[in-house]
Length: 96
Image (cartoon, rainbow, N blue to C red; front, top):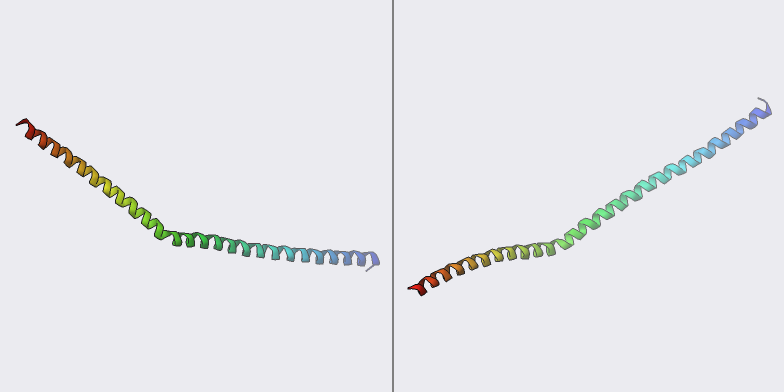
C-alpha cells in the first residue's frame, strides 16, 4: 500500500468515526425527544382528567339545579293552566 492510499484510508476512517458519533448523537436526541413528548402528553391528560375529577361535583350540582328549574317551570305551566280553569269556573258563577 503506497503512502497516498494509506493517507486516504486514514481520512476515510476518521470521517466514518465522525459520522458514527454524529449518528449516535442524533439517535440519542430522538430517543429523549420521544420520552419528553410522552411525558408531556401524560401530564396534559393527567391534568385534564384531574380537573374533571375536581370539577365534577360542581357540575353535577349545576346540572341538578338546572333540571330542577326545568321541572319547576313545568309545575308553573300546570299551575297557570289550572288558574285558567278556575277563572273559567268563576266566570261561570258570575253569569248565573
